Image (tube, rainbow, N blue to C red; front, side):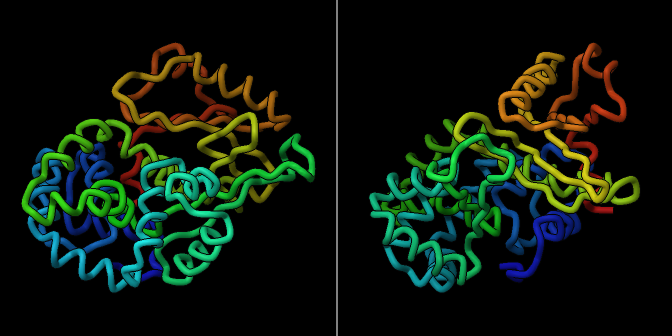
Length: 294
């Protein structure tokens, strides 16, 4: 595993150097699976499941031992980590999926954070309309992409894998592959925006945003005090002007006065949306991730 102190941007840069490719869609999708671990050469152009079976499933026993060294092997921790990997990371939903009481879940989170496996992101209460008595869940994220993959697709299905039967893994991957890279795309987008704004008006805070009514993939603040809101769409369709309208409506609902809207896309944008691009609307695609590895 890469050092606990390594940032996601650094992990992505290391992954690029180990597996150089001009196709950043392939890089993002393979990084979501293999990121954070030294694998030797990986042909990122190959189908993901082919690589999963060859590099992970067939070496299950060895990798499992390494994972257990990191987690301590406690079933409770593994249940919670799988719940985080399979859901949206919110604490209440993760505890419920793992069948853990809040007190038990909270203690497990403290230990897993201490072990460098996950980190906690808190909601930005100062911008929400909810009252002091209303509780908005924290979110739990993995520090390394590979650990998220392992606890989503391997750990919960270990019996079949152990016996050499990969049927369940393949089925789960086929059902979830299209959406699995969404989170990594969003997280790498945060890193890209730090680079993009570094000279113009450096970003001092960037993360996702959520409250009881709305959610944004991108929420940021710059040195000059500007507020950034945005979305990331890792789909095979070009993003249309309606996405900007949706963001503007949600900003009003959340009572956030956004100075700059940002939209990230896997496949690009409609001509109508591109025509609106300017200081108050920034657009980017996976091709721009080359700035993260420069």
